[in-house]
Amino acid sequence: MSELLYRCPQTGRELALGIALDPDVFARARLDYRVIHCPHCGQKHEWSKDEVYFKIPPERDKAYLEKKRRRS
Image (cartoon, rainbow, N blue to C red; front, top):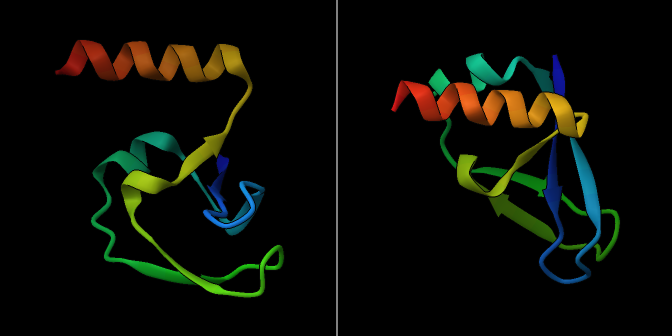
């Protein structure tokens, strides 16, 4: 499982969403917009599935992207 991250649009700093799951499960999941309180700027940010990313070692990330590309 990998942790989901989001980048604050105000500061550009990364923050953990407190969600960890398998990238394949995430790819199939239906997620509505979610809201997180940002510790970096103090604002609330709405995020969507397209705006978050995984904290994955680069070699695993490349493998996941290749696997996803082959499915398309």
